[in-house]
Amino acid sequence: MEGFGSMKELLTYIAQNLVDHPDAVAVSEHTGEGETVLELRVAPEDMGKVIGRQGRIAKEIRTLMRSVAQRQGARVSVEIVD
Image 1 (cartoon, rainbow, N blue to C red):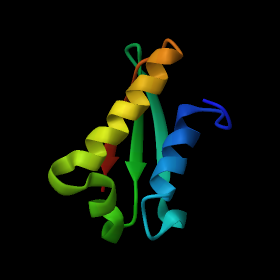
Image 2: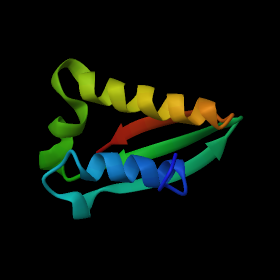
Image 3: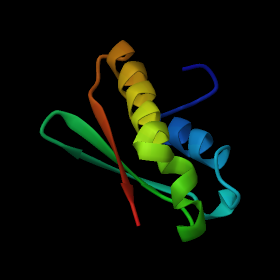
Image 4: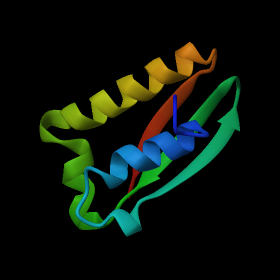
């Protein structure tokens, strides 16, 4: 994960590059039961850009984040909240 200090920074970077309002992107991190939960918030008008048709983009974001976490020996999940 070169260039990123944490999973939170990586998710923030990904989301900011998908939306029209990158300043509105916020990621909070919670740890529980052996897993880190990352909550992603974006501007209401950008919600469709991070979810995508039939949830495809959201699924890909989750897959990417899970893959990076596995390489680090961690477990992570991503929740997109409004």
